[in-house]
Length: 113
Image (tube, rainbow, N blue to C red; front, top):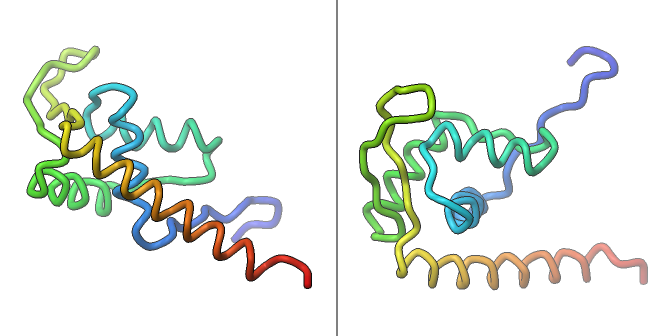
């Protein structure tokens, strides 16, 4: 690591699906757009690599939490756009609740006694 450069943060296990579902709850996007959105919203703290993103999207498709269709991008390229399904919206609520419980539990451990 070069002095003065911040190390990229790794995602907590289990949070990638949550981040993708939340991102898609805002609007349908292609994979690259999802990665860019997460990076932008987190001020470059979180970066989702292709090697993690596309297998996660495939898992979400198999679960029925997202659906996909081929469309043209703004730059006139063909890309697979992902949309949150009603089942995915319910799952987002479940995952968000579980994440908030985990964060609260970690906070209690980290509190000064």
